[in-house]
Amino acid sequence: MKKLWASLLLTILVCIPTLVSASEYEIVPHTGPERGMYPGGGFDRTLSFWELPFKLQLIYISGLLATSVTLYKFLPLLLGRVRQNCKNQNRDEILEFITANPGTTKSEIERQLKLNRGTIRYHLKMLQIYNKVKCVRKGRLVMVFKNSYKHTDSEQKIEFFLRNDTKKCILISILREPGITNWDLTQKFCLDKSTVHWHISDMNNEGLVDIKNDGKYKRCFINPTIKTDMERLISESESGISAS
Image 1: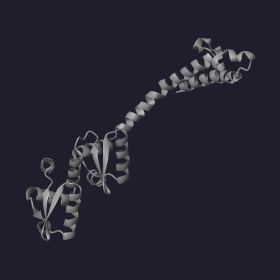
Image 2: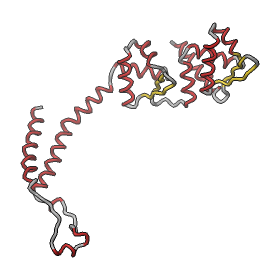
Image 3: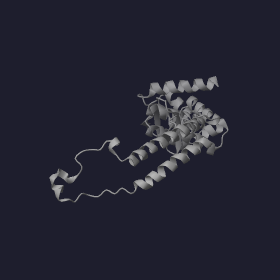
Image 4: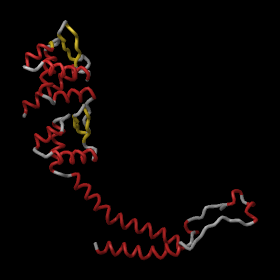
């Protein structure tokens, strides 16, 4: 470290006198009578580096040397600090959990990994900076996915609804019992009618569920364009629960 400071001090001692003396140069427009002989009235060629005054050459070379020394000494330290920041046990555990649970939320990470919310927010921010994860907002909630996660927007919506036990039960029932009514769902899960109505409306607004009126009841069907994806994701979700 002492050698580094000595090198910087030497560079400063060389450059400062040169810069001071170089300030004596003054460039003014040429106002002689022969100005009109040259189009534009300026230089008719560009000076090469070796045609510059020796002091300007010295300034340029000293600047290059100072930059090179600084990069040589400090760049490895900076890169080492970045690598150190990238490697963190809590951050690795969070990324591993997100990979295994696409569409997870901060609350789920907090509950499963036993980390405080501030720590989770910090590490998620760092993972976003390093382009490891991406966040998708759904209303007031934010779903977190690994950045290499290739699911479509519809699949991400399905993942979101499967993260909630009540929504998941309702979706599975609609998938396996096409045309089930809101009243049937109310009775099946012992839920308030307004709660079932809210969940179904939310699924309908997101394009997951189609609703057909049948008198005073509403019959629910899975949107046929996403039915295959929903069956696969539900199967994967249930397999994950069985494995755990």
